[in-house]
Length: 226
Image (cartoon, rainbow, N blue to C red; front, side):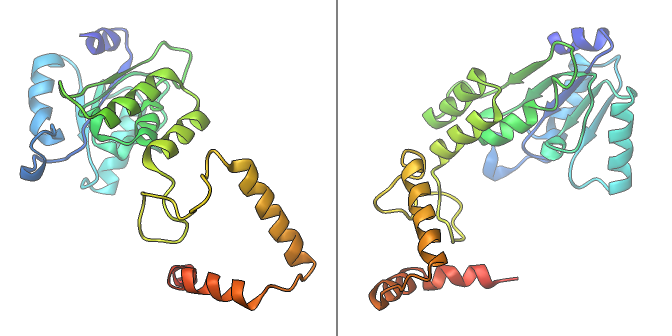
């Protein structure tokens, strides 16, 4: 197992799980607590292992982070709490279980936990035998580039741009006659023209104002929540 080889080289390993405990509603997911002892005993018996998840108290969590960064833990099995905020240049392998169930941006963030030095680093995406076409497209994007901007663009394409003012996180965009990605230059020009008209105090027709108020009144109300 490659992860063992890296630990023998005095490097460190992450293994990431989507769930803390087993769930009846998500039977296809491997859980951290359901897999920890089995993986530890099968692959890392002679190494120092630890687990980490969001329900662990802050003081203990900080100690685990500290011990991992300072080389006292060889293999850290965790949920996505490691997604940001941990920097260990000596970690060279990350294994992401059930990778087909993560979003593209999240996979990119998790992958970023390794490769933080000049050491060769590796990200393993573990999936079920059969995954959806959307999950395959996400993984294909991740395999094709390390560019965060390109990944953000592809993530937007795959998820849809969503609404500007809404509780809905994704879906069809509110724009009825334009596409936020393909018509970016046109939208920027329209925005520039609007700012110019407003700066010139150009009078807006009552009909246009009423149309905007009718379409956006409920959604604009979210912008006033503080």
